[in-house]
Image (tube, rainbow, N blue to C red; front, side, top):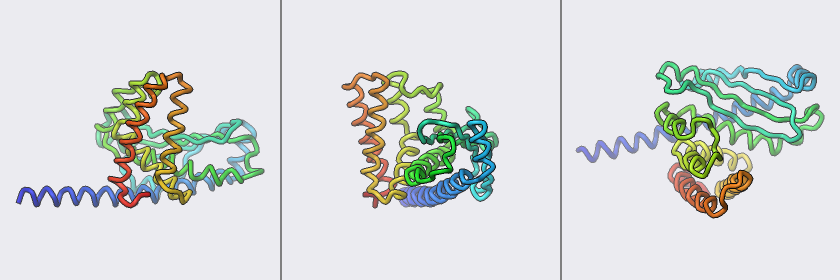
Length: 242
């Protein structure tokens, strides 16, 4: 009887993870669409082109009302020579259950002045945006306890301070889940094999490590460990992934 209950519990947990994952996939698409539409807004464009920056909050109750640990989504535009996107999930450290409800996601976007004159960059921008959003939404579904394990190891978010902090970050359970789910979303958007997109992301991490002058031999060892852990997680969570 005990074994049967354990098997039922495991099946329930797997089913719960699948349902949660599908919902977060949908929310990342909704947020991406909202951000793309905001970039086409004439008032936002005028503010950005005049001042070189624009900050605003997305009105997305269909997302924020449904996710327990997400209250707001902010977008910060900054003039840049190159198009870029990154984001951060913000929460109160050691938050209580109630405090976690005030968490938010801030999406940082770098764009050239008068970007609206040529929107062809959207073809490459949107998959990266969806990857970024899916990554941060995964964090919104993780427990405070899980997040704080990494926070205590890398408190200042300086991932490449040394090889140990890079290892603590990229091999952590929370970042493994966030990176892999983001990669999976990007692969679906590009209609490419997930393993191809993952290899590309790992290559970017490798060259970032080299740019921080990490010992190449140590970096190679770390990359092999990251690749193995991420691949195992990928096929555990998405058994049909290619």
